Length: 72
Image (cartoon, rainbow, N blue to C red; front, side):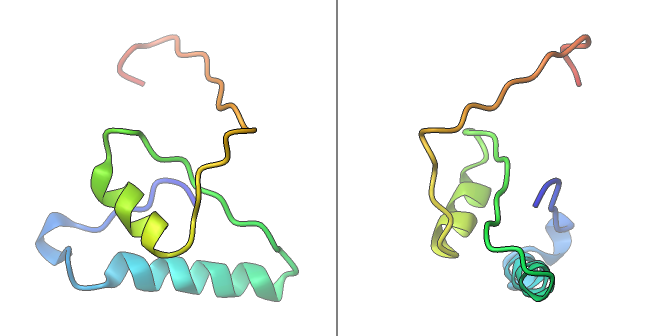
């Protein structure tokens, strides 16, 4: 799950949680058994939401990127 966002005007209504559940259900129907997401450490609200939904950090995985533009 990447780039999930809810318009600020509609936050705190369970929309993101419902979207996550729907995505997970579709993926399960396709036989997918591992779900993952990328979240910036500074995005505490997303970290809290995904933690609440059972997602856990995996210290055996490293995320690497090469950014040609510091704004990217």
